[in-house]
Every structure is written in C-alpha cells, then in structure tokens.
Image (cartoon, rainbow, N blue to C red):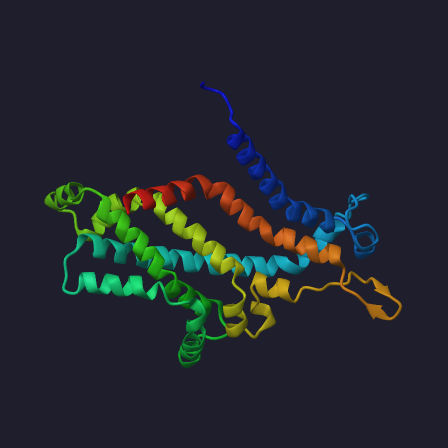
Amino acid sequence: MPGKINAREIVSYSLLLVILILSFVPIIMMLSMSLRDSLMIYGDFWGMPWPPKISNYSFALIDLMAPILRTLYLCVVSIVGIMLFATLSGYAFARLKFVGRNMMFWIIVMLMTVPGVLLLTPNFVLADWLHLKNSLEGLAVFYIGGGQLFAIFLLRTFFTSQPEEMFEAARVEGASEFRCVWSIALPLARPILITIAIMNFLSIYNDLIWPMLMISTPNLQTISMALANYAPDAGNSIGKISRPDLGIITSGYVFASIPLLLMFMVGMRYFIEGLTSGSIKA
C-alpha cells in the first residue's frame, strides 16, 4: 500500500539518524569547547559552556585573521588559474581536432592515478630551481598545475556531451573559438566550474604538507600552518608552567572553518548539480 513504511525502511532511517547524530557530535563539542577555558574543559569535559567565554574568539580573530586572508588570496589566485587553463584545455580536447589529441588526453587520465605524495620531492626541487619557494605566488603555481588534471577531465567530458550544432552555428556566424568558449562553453559549464572551484578550495585551504615545504617565513604562513602551531596561553599559567588554552585553540579551529562553511552554503546547489551532470554526461 502507498505510504506504508516497512521494517527495512525503519531500520535504514534509524541508521541514518544515528550516523547524522554521530557526525554532529564532534562539531557540537568543538563549539562547546571554544566557549570555555582549559579549567572548565578539564573539570567537566561534557559540561555546558556557561558562562560562555566569547573572548576566546577575539584572541582567534587577532591571531588568525592574517593567515586566513593569505590563504583566501592563495585559493582565489589558484582557482582562477585552474579554471582558466582547464577550460581552454578541456574545450580543445573536446571540440578541436589536432594530432595526438586522444593520446594526450589518455596521458592526462593516467597521470590522475599518480599519488600526490610521490610528486612532493620533484615539485620541491623544481620550486627551488625556479626560485618559487617562500612565496604565495610560488604555491599558487603548483596548485594551478596540480589542479589541471581532474578539471580537464571533467570539462572535456562535459563539453564533449554538448551538441556540436551550437558551436558550429556560432562559427558560421563568424565567431572565433575563443568567442565560442566565452559565449557558449562557459555558461553551459557553470555548475562544473563551481564544482571544480569548491573541490580545489577544500584541497588548497586544508593543505598542510606542501605549504610547510615551501614556506619558511612566519609572515607567509597559511591557515593550516598557523593552526598546526597555534598554542596561545592567554596569560594563564599554573605554577611556573604556561599551558596552552584549549578554549582559545578550539575557537581558532571554529574561526578557521567559517570560510569552508560559507563556501558550501553558497555553492552547494551548484556543487551537487555539477557532480550530477558530470556523472550523467560521462
């Protein structure tokens, strides 16, 4: 009968509810710890943050604002470069005919299987040879290069699935290939481009290993580097030993996660649409 819920659906929904609750427990605990100090946390770990210490966030705001702004700048420059070069390359692989096109594309597909960890050493040597170390722009160069493979694969697959008649009609009217990219390909690929932007934003924003290899100046630290070394004591000490304040440290984690949350809130609809269209077209 329609509307009737069987035992299997009850079990499935119950498991999903349990998983949902377990997923939110770390987030709730992080928010709770960010509004307390170390004594309150050690005294009653599961206790409520009362009275809440809003001042923890002022410490995090002062200490982490500069690394967050640097990381956002790095993300914007890298993502713009990734989308620019990947769009042109994906369009070329999908719509232009040239010698070795299929072979070059399958080389890109094979390179996608290479673990990124294996590229750390050659990339570091290359960065040192090109004098790109210790600069945000140097980081961006390698993020742009590293983000090309998957972006080209997605965009080439998407452009190939679009009707050739649209592009041919534009060429008949005198449009150049760059005009076809700008007026036809880019508007159609907006969900895919937003998906690429979100995936690369998450990767770049959370990356720790590559910035630690490339950056040695404290004034150029990204947010991941800053959080890895973030241990303020807010002037609190027990005896003669100064100890990090867990509340301020956790508030830093909360503060650093705000750009990620905003990114998902703004682009989630396009992110899902891009993944869905990419999977269907492929």
